[in-house]
Amino acid sequence: MNTELTKLEVARRQLGTALALFLEDKDPVAVHVLTCGGGEIADRLAEVAGAEPFETHVLATFPEMNKGKLAVLRKKHWNALKHATTHNGKDRNDAELLGTFSDETNDHHLFIGWYDFANAGGRLPIEAQAFQAWYFAKHPDKLSDGFDPANFTSLFPGLTQVDRSQQKARLRRVIQRYRRHRDIMADSKTDPRPLILGPF
Image (tube, rainbow, N blue to C red; front, side):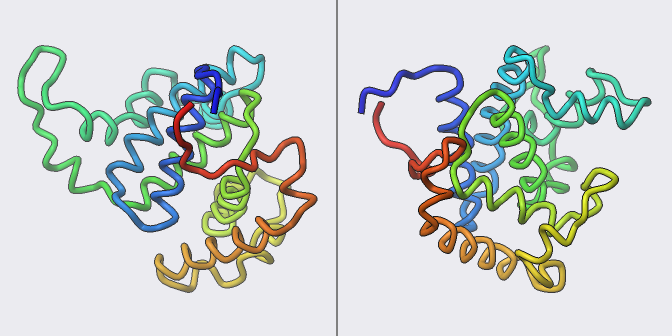
């Protein structure tokens, strides 16, 4: 395919594969590890691009938070899922932490990863665009003051009243509908490629 493997492309591949697995209710562990890997790259690339990564918004909103605390919070499950030992070479005891992990944890990490990816200059697949709207319809409390949740709940009416499998099914239906929308798919901000990419 002759695609240059840049850091932005690496982030796209990890986030894209993670979102594809998420949409089909596949392994949440793989989703989380891929999302956090791609998200960490996207966070840095957004900063390098002169945009504000999501962590800047968090730090401004929660003055009691600092970069170190935020990093611990963002990486707690990721570290438990990818490391067998501590920095000192001792076995990690992650049983309690792993007991708090669920697929819903991935909602937030996927949102942040794609947010930073877009700010880094990446084009969003239609699946990621629909996911962002789905995220706010599911978590309207995450909207900044002044944003009307109706912009998102109208696309996903009653989303919080159905179970998780139905929530994802509704997201998949919206994606299918908008993938057939020629103007959106041809927009310069849309990456028309499939979520899971092949050789480069």
